Length: 216
Image (cartoon, rainbow, N blue to C red):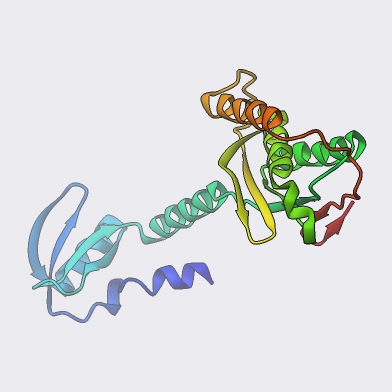
């Protein structure tokens, strides 16, 4: 099927309707000749006459092994497809308060997602008056990002969108970098500032973890 699509892109051999063509190719001097003579030349060399510029005057044709050309094109397409990595976004949801057990539970899954090459979207959802704990939610997300510094890189600082405060963390390369980078320093500094700024709150409230269609 794919080969048929590639073949449809070119006229070859007897499909070429022009009376004369300009031929090019390896070890072939560029010249204009009658199409029938170009076909004979291609046959003598064990190659195909392939029209590569049909709108030129006269059309330009190349002498090549067309089967080999199609194989190489198909191989290139496969290589390009293999390099295209599909990145999924895994979602982790918090409330504005949590305990260490729930936090570590979600942190563990976030590490797994990042190691698998997926992006993590972590957000704190504020219900009703819990929006008063906005700064506490920001501290939570910044701590979360800081704890994931070896596995992912923060794409943007926490941002409030409606009732949710969101942060995106993209996976790092396969090779884990243990040294804290500049952006990670910014995250840690922000955590320290906000922790000093906000009043101490007792952690209660329930937490939920949702991962795009999966519950843990």
